[in-house]
Image 1 (cartoon, rainbow, N blue to C red):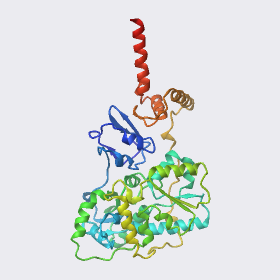
Image 2 (cartoon, helix red, strand yellow):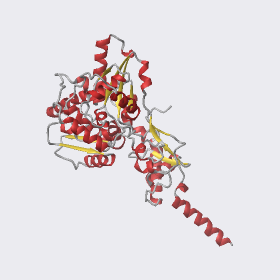
Image 3 (cartoon, rainbow, N blue to C red):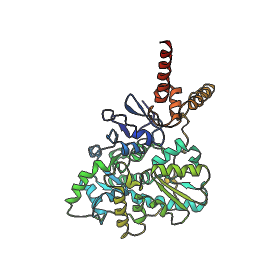
Image 4 (cartoon, rainbow, N blue to C red):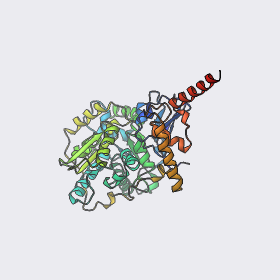
Length: 423
């Protein structure tokens, strides 16, 4: 079984090999062979870009369902702040929180509460000036995984703080243990997620041994029942404990604004994120303390598992924040329990050609030779995203040179010329 867990899956029956996903994957994790896409497990970061661009809905993300919460005696929902942007004419987030209780959860703990704690901890760490700058936010798991794969030299720049999801799950579990007297395994903590990368992070975390979450339910799965429950609410219990700083994390720039300074940069959308990371790697970005990067356009409101147009959701979040206090959550003196358990490291196995260093060097030389002989137009018709990826696939035994239509055409022409000369 693969050591890499992924929430993004391929429905081969729906795939027609159109190469839309091939050209959009930021880590070259997709190949198309025999008319079907294939996902290279070791390179996929579950950003959901393939889900977003597939015209045949052949890519999907697995996540928990409401039925899964029935396995626990006490159920806790920790909704992402982007959830509040999915509903029209929402003026009070308590409607959403009460709706979650109406569909089966015993308690709701907003991730936006934890976001305010993480924001304060980040401000403290920046002030202490002990981290390598510019500091890159660790909130988006797709970005963190992409740094591990494509930009390993920047691992030291990533903020070693737990993401708000994990902080919320840990805090919610502690409160549930205290309030109920139940065992930890009897308490189910479920994240209500806008994206596939966060589902993967729960099942295969980058910086902790085990996530405090028991599962993640996508916006798209929970929306129908939640929306219906909200329409039939009679009494609204005051549950919300978030301010505008926490809710603002739903939109791109919200986390950066919470730094309460001006030396920050925020970018969203996978292509813009890559551009910023390339500039950062080349040391072209200076005089910046903090960098917020979101793989999805617009921030978490643009996640592949949401139901609303991200720009509409973004506007709704902005409107909600108008009537909120700045922040309702604050940390104590100690932030050790909010720090990473594991160091972020480059996974060398992903790109290792062979265990034998001399054989690997020989394979690398062959790749360079093949690349020079390919057309270099990165058309994708061979089933690989670039000619260089094609060359690597050939050396690894995943492809052959005649998969390139230009090489195949040249071979056919050569055979034709030879036969013509014999006649």
